[in-house]
Length: 406
Image 1 (cartoon, rainbow, N blue to C red):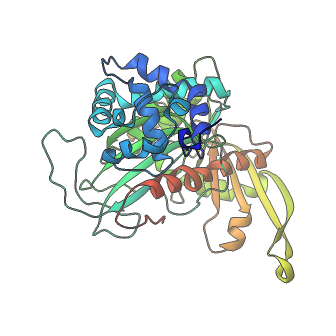
Image 2: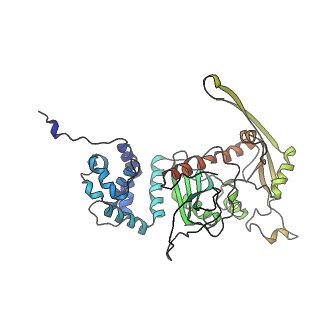
Image 3: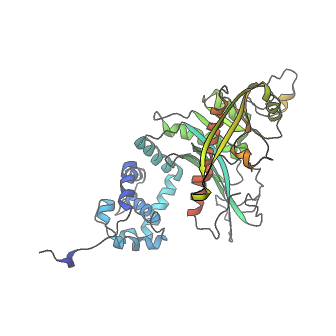
């Protein structure tokens, strides 16, 4: 007869699902193959246990052991391990080993296996930046990777220290039109992260870290090349969408001529090519559409019609910076010939409907613009950078106040 006293009850919640995804990603194997360890518990299982904790209660390292006291460890990790194996010393040794191996290198290896397993389409990427303000006293050390200072605040709080995240992502919707990234003052606290990220699956593909004073363009090529290398024969990047902070003719020329990648970038309103595109609207290829949608509930339920009016313009030669040399004095030479570039002028869209006084958006691209709404939609998918990784990432960090997007 079954004795109820011999039955132990463990809390599983969502963790078997986490285990299954970890198994499909090959997480434990990739980490164990990368890290040379003689620990009693493999580094991969330590990391898997830490992930389960983070996705449950996000305990400090010294409380992870307590977290596993009432868990069915054989079920979750495939081995009868005692909770004591997940002490903070063991976790610390694994984290040190990961740092020694290279965080971005290990990250890329895991991501590559994940993309292969889940057959993720990452042929289109988008890039943007955001900032997070923090409080606290920080004592810099000579060997610190981070430079701890003040600088330009996108949160409109220059009295607070901050760090900036630069994200390269795949797919998305509804971009943030105003508030381009400005040049960061040299005295800035923190670091930047360049990430290639697939918004459809919320899986990152490649990343790079640097101190915050590093210009956005410095690692733009490197992170794109890393993404291409990580994809291997699994997929290819077909197009890239940037914000105005990545306005660089040499970068665009490199994408077009060396990688054969389409790019979509909004022009700055002080550019000659911006005003040239606006002046050429009547000679361009116009395309419109309307879509109905329902807003409100109950008595307040109503139908509204969104309207788009965009114009494609080919062969503009007023973007002298678009070429292998980028911007420079060569643009003023008598024999200088500018390379043609295409543009799409957004005469009307739902954003301008709500913000009638904003400047018209002009998208610069090397893609065909005979169907300008296709170009518009390619850029318009970029909002998942703001609505997904930036927002969700900030909410998970322990800051002294919630981060605010500006």
